[in-house]
Length: 273
Length: 241
Image (cartoon, rainbow over all chains, first blue to last red):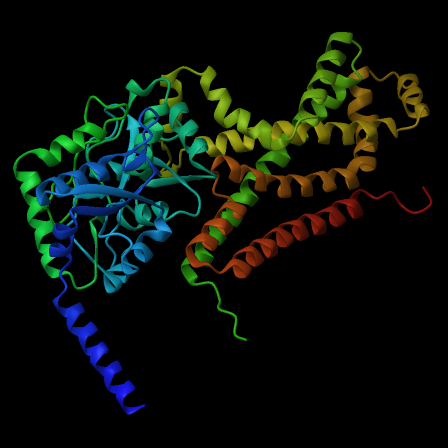
């Protein structure tokens, strides 16, 4: 019994020291593979390519750049929003690149890199109708009932006329009829809406946002060296122009629905204007 | 168990919604009654063309759901208007009359009251018409024998009696107008149902939000009920008649 306890204690000690000494960054390099969780059904962040049946997207492009710099192979593990943290804590993946919004609650369980993407509440308006945020106060703006969009709008622009509709298609019809001059939604959703409009050249998403969600790389808790490495890599990608190339590939002027880039890696906040 | 009450801010929203409901109901009641009289007379007019038009109106407006009619006036009809007209309608043009400012109605308000009135007119007309049919044939003959013209006959003999017959169903129709006005929230008109949903979404006090809305509608209907009794008493025929 006594011997057993001693062995167990030794084992535990060994495990504990092993954990303290283990470094994910070295592990990845040793393994020669970077395991990354990405979305497989959330274009353009991560989705299955119809032709190659591989997962591609903005998040995957960033993961590829990190793997390239590490000199290892990239292995993509498909995930959904609910699985992102469990995959990390269970050590099934090394990193999560999945449109992962940085929140204080999540930061208690895992670590985040600096943000490499930001989205926020934006507007869809007839071309030229809405150029700067201070115009919002004098406009009629359509929003969906029961969403946080309405509350944010009311809080920031108490003088704006907000008209609530049952869902986004109704709000869109109201915009197209001229009943409202703009509708508000999350920027990435507006891009999808705009992309499907038959007369989309009449409309635009003005280049400002009234709220922000910052997205970073999910990293297992306590891997400080790995986080520092990621942060350096991301900042370098911004410096050498790769970040803006990746952005333009998915949201640039030549894409189906362009979205102005309001956030650069290293910025503290999304650009208000 | 303590029940959390709605904050004053939310009660203000609900009060504004209640006022809007009352306001659109009053407008719809007044105009649907005027238009309903016309439609009822047209349905029994001498010229067949009037009768046909009136029948078509009743057919269209009584046999389609109000929600679809409201969607039509708000979402579909503007497509027929030129872009500039819509822009003009949606830009406030406040009227300054002798020092007091009249606010510009929103397009939701215009489409909502317009749609509600047209719908209610079909029903109000049918109630007035059944009142007219309740007037005994002898009254027409007596009026004709007295040398009254067709118009005078309607004005002094038939319609007053018809109205008396129709009062009860008419007030029932007015109550329907109050309740049907809730459908205008589908086109973004900030009446009582709309504000109750808004309050519910912001405060998460579901029971309180819809409870207050229910009380609001009961209150409005109660006012109509009291009004109906008073009008009926006033126009009641003396006993034995």
